[in-house]
Length: 360
Length: 78
Ligand code: SF4
Image: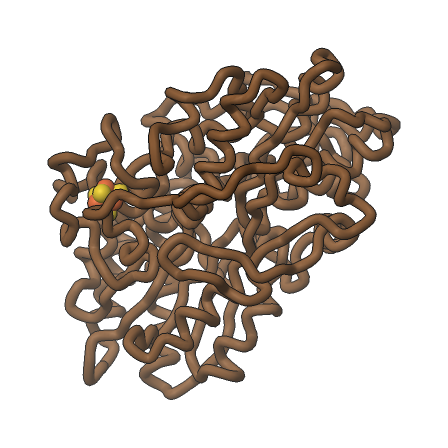
């Protein structure tokens, strides 16, 4: 066991890989984007960006679900949370995200952090006079757990459980980034646990339509360096392919059973991302048969003018166009203790990762 | 938030689609209805209370070490 572990963290293996990367002849710096908050954390924690800084510019993309949730969604959640007849259930990351005014934490009446969406059903059964609303935020990894919860509520006839729809899927966002001519990303590190559920075949468009590369990567320093080396070799050889270097947890087709359940409950829709704007087919909303779980069907929310903090660059950070350090508030007005934008709230937000490991 | 934590299956309740699972001595009931045919003794990746994929024992253990490293500063993740 220890041997196996040390193999992954072995600094010799890391050093060897870094040397191999240095030896690849490149005529320019290669731009690689990671679209997974856990990759961002691992890269920053182990200082991988520094090890390969001569060859690679590592850019963080829209990999943190809470961060890409637009402020209008947070405002809607806060409006719901202020009502007497509502109990909000949510993942903890959402609590402190600033809305236009305040956050769920300081304005909500009954906001309960759950570890799993399925806990909402018990809360709904125990509080029959209340409407229990789960804040459905998250990418492909999380969506099946929400779909399973809705399916279970449907089966058990629980009629006071709802969701506020906010789920998103990754491929259309990557397409939007690739369509941006100013970006010129050479390759992507594909998110390991998103691909565990959805597989990686759906990312073939990156090679086939855009002539770029992408590699599914695990989260160990060696995993990430292997993936970087693979992308550099492909760039060097003029190859444009999608490869899986995380077969330990990722099969080409992903988890079919989970995806089938998701497709039974949800359908794709055009939705808003913070920073990236409206992206066609990038969100998941309830199918007609399950619309009764949509909270906005039973509670009409007034339109309000949602506003982000004028100095917060989170939107640009999510597109990879700004670095947290470019923000005037980074580490000054904005810290994990007093976050101004979502990228500093969630532990996997890019600003939070840069702040936490700023000495690396 | 897309983080999966590896756990070992201790016992399975097929009828309810649940299992008793364990990680570093911490026990928890999880849902196994997103996977086919989960058995006692197997390792799975758990995300938000649901098993989302099976993995090998070695992979489970190496992943766990990494998670402790990055997220929990050597505490056991819950
Ligand atoms: S440091 Fe804070 S204010 Fe600046 S971009 Fe990041 S989250 Fe926004």
